[in-house]
Image (cartoon, rainbow, N blue to C red; front, side, top):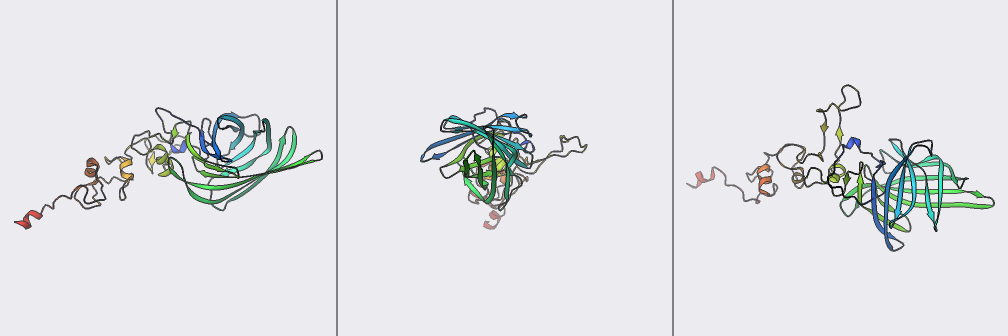
Length: 325
């Protein structure tokens, strides 16, 4: 699941509960950049359509471009707890062929943990000819992936797609090995196989409203950071069981990408996350961690460091003049 440049002028951030943990939503776009056989390589992926007739399950069609040229499509099913791959259309030496599966192959799942293993198999149809197909997926590690705009924690998932069978007397036996690094809610952030490697450079998810640059509340913490780094999650109370939130009983347990000052203590979330000892979720305007007699709020107004007692210069103690008389 990949990337695409996006420049929405007025981003609107949906609640976390409305975001898809796998990024499988119509309109989601990703762009990756890297190298392929030593040459510059750009991959763009976008969910462009919903297909409810091709397969037994509802699937989302992903369009894939390489260096600006459409090279194929893939069809994914999202069950809520896993993503299944149902096939795709691919280019090979100028020729395109479509491969569909009798069953969806397990490509991703949530929650996920290092050490998880999945194997699924089906019948693949290529030009109407049946072959065997299997997909093996292993989560081997959890690591920080440095991207151009941030560093994200992602799961390293190693895949092996195996297709085998006979066409007359000819034997087909093809294996494709590749690795994805996947971050929940963001999708794949790095893509690699023996010939190429590419990292996420930009994206638009949640219906095209969250990008790597958007900051809906203007608090100097990007929407991306508020959701994926500070783990924004919205918890809804539904007293009457109608599937809708109670409205004024929405509880935020992390920073709110639509509110520049989540805890309403007068200091912006962006400023509070800059300094150890401050918490954008707890009203702490009256605190004084560096004991310089300036409150956190006063330091915010002065633009000084609340953890450095010499910034600004400490105020004189009120009883000191009495000792000097």
